[in-house]
Image (cartoon, rainbow, N blue to C red):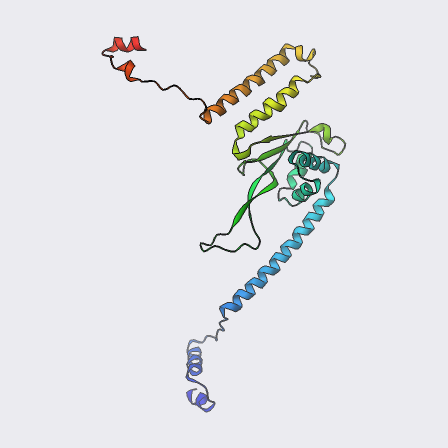
Amino acid sequence: TESKYHRHGGNRRTRSTELESAVTGSSLTTVLPASSIVKKSKALSSESRKELAKQAKVTKEERRAQIDGRYRYLISRLADGIDLSEQQVEETIISDDKFQLIEQFFAPSGLKKLLFFYQDVLQQKSNASLRSDGSTNNLPQKKLFITMGSTEDFTGTCAFFLRTSDEVITASNVSQEVNFGMFDCTNGNILQGLEFFLSQIMIPALKSQQNWGAVKDGLKNSQIQEFLYAVDKFVGTLSSSRQNIEDKIQLTKVDIDVYVRNLQNPSDYITAG
């Protein structure tokens, strides 16, 4: 082999590689430059992103086609409550990965509640560059999204829909079968938001209610009065709990030495007690 390569002008590195291949029985492996691998990876990544974007667009259009009077009712309530346009709410809903929860809410004997959070969420810019430590610049941005209420921290506004029966929700009965409400828990102050919702919205609405169904005499009925008293009492307890948590109730500091300095025997303890 060496003489053959000498005759054909082969160099020593080629001869050595060929001999090594012949001894080991292995084939030669071509090692691509790192730059070529990176370019190929970027090309594949770009194609993957395009395919995902295409699939997402198809999914959004399929969901948009499902929107009927029931969805329009939810969208209009959310737009009014959160001060967004109906178009913005619609785009948000059809892009949400929990979109199927809405249909489950409409189904007979379906979900009893449908929750939306509107709060700051960290959003990564598409063209954000990596920092030296490998992290990216994430900026908080207001976002409306569907939630089960148990997986995300609640730091903003909650908009909720509640069913009043197990009947299937249709475009003709959605306004009668579904109740809408909101409460604000900005900065995560849930107790304050719930207290405001009950004291400023629910209790005044209940006290102005004239028709109590099968209960006669309305607000004059003793059961209704007991119920309203219980709700008032609950709100008072809620307010006290919130103030305790926020350290707004300060107990007077007492110089305990004045009371224990002269305690000598058990009878003194009983007297002090």
